[in-house]
Image (tube, rainbow, N blue to C red; front, side, top):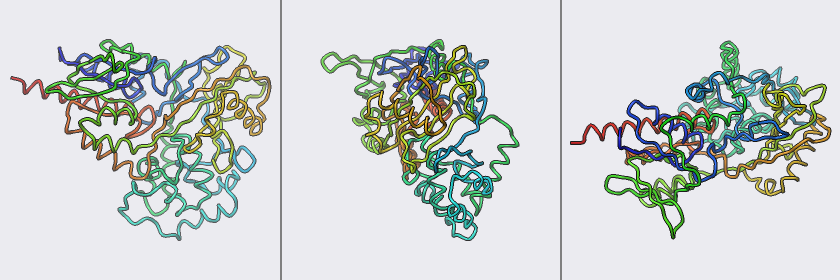
Length: 469
């Protein structure tokens, strides 16, 4: 589509996936990515700790859906894909780090294994065992209108929510089960609800199927998942402009006009089509002038902040077992999860004498914790790791990476809100929105959404060309 320009606003993984799909189309338009920061990648970032590269943002790709893995292969990283050396996880609760029993997002598939783990009390086990005699949701109930906690606690009791579901959801959304939509935030559990009267029976069947398929759940990239965005940006036909925040978006007669730069010295970029791959606040600001109802819906999507604390220890003779552990908020610890990066991924720390460990800090409503200085967060993470697993020794290095307002919250009603936003945006066929705020916060989901947005824009440009005299 010579002479046509598509501007993608936002250089995170969703925006870059959209740019790649546009630039590699058979009739590719000119593609310009406007990124307000001084780097691309959004929540994907590789940094050095103790002289070793390591992901300090998202560290894995969901391997059970194809989009992100296929994109990595398309940009030349196929031979760099690898799977975790171990996925054996644990829960730090009730005074010990306890092996995680088989679950589907916290719904236990085996009460005997759960009992052996010691994660819940005997009273909690007895309550979970009552599921078969308790009333369940009425058939056809709106699973977007109920929280994860409401459904799981009703069927299995509050301890299952507190000790299993909450830490798993906290790792994904940094949110809380009593506010997150079952359908939007926990589609795995929603599928169990739809499968039959017993969540546990459905969880057992799901685990059997997954175990039979023997397909790795996650994938990584040697050298860091953050390499993916750099590889995408090198795709011929994609122009990246850093330090280019968009202040305004206007629709003229037949083109879009984007306003960049300062108020006294504005810069104008024109485009035939626009993809907004930004968080909801800047997207709402750009849409407020001509789509105020969409902007209002976007503003209702809240975000949570968190931080990744990456620590380098002298490599011990006996490495920790498993990939790491999760921490239920009910236990009142500072960290919400720990990953033994140098154990989980065989490339992390390779060639050094360091064991790299990352700790996640911060859930929705815990802004006061994240207001601490970097040194305080490092000390808190070190203290929790010492108490949990006895990880000690002189710290070689420590790095705090703060992700302010990074994780959208899929609250009750989220799916309906997204459907309304999508329906309203269709009024402008040469405009699209995409990103983590809509259909999934993981890399694969964001890649899928960016690709979908690009497909719709390309279709509209082709239709426009066909109709031209």
